[in-house]
Amino acid sequence: MRVTAEYRWHMTTTGLAGLGPRRRPSQERSRQRFSQILQAARAQLVDVGFESFTCEQVAARAGVPIGSLYQFFANKYAIVCELDRLDTEGMQEELAGFAERIPHPEWATLLDSFVDHLAVLWRDDPSRRAVWLAMQSTPLTRAIGAEHEGALAARVTRLLGPLTPGSQVEAREQIAQVLIHVTYSMLNFSIRDGQSHPDAVVQLKNMLTAYLVAAEEAAARHASTRPPEATT
Image (cartoon, rainbow, N blue to C red; front, side, top):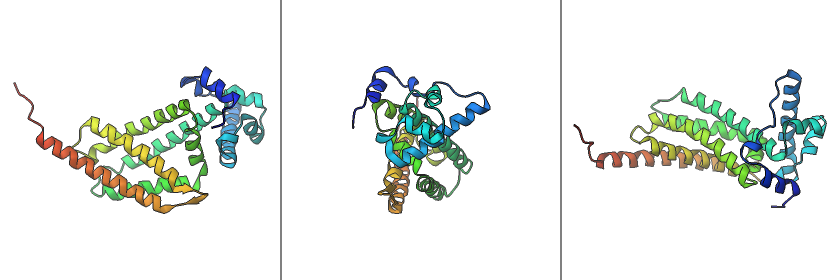
């Protein structure tokens, strides 16, 4: 990766907390400007990629002074982290809707439909993949991306209760982390070369279903061999 002065500054002067917005707008006019900046950033990220992405380009595309952008964001890393946070919130809402349909005797069918829905979101909104790729650009952005994935995994852990009743909470947490990371990675792989590759989505659904079945079978075997707890 090309090492820029901005990247060196970012690595030496910021931590995880430093990659959030400098401030969040409270007035309507500021909220509109904040939203304009983020919308322009998404479009610019799709058009040029993260390596060529600059704050100056975003400000120009949003039609705001560069000083106004810097009031909210210290650098381009802070912008993409905010975009990833918003995408994570959107995914949380999708999972909440999914949770309303569990428990369900046809959970595998529900899993298929959920993955299909996510695949359509990634196919129809190229910025989701662009943001995800941008978050892989530095150790700090990857760490924040991992925090966001962890928030999703925590929700998935709760969803797994009805799907994997034989497993322990610790096992569900590990399963959830795998499910989130594999899903993001495969969705990224399903949109490449400027085209959608639905075969990758099919393989993703097969992998997730097989993994959940295997995990539950393993949990059941472990439960059957576990000695009974001592009673007093």
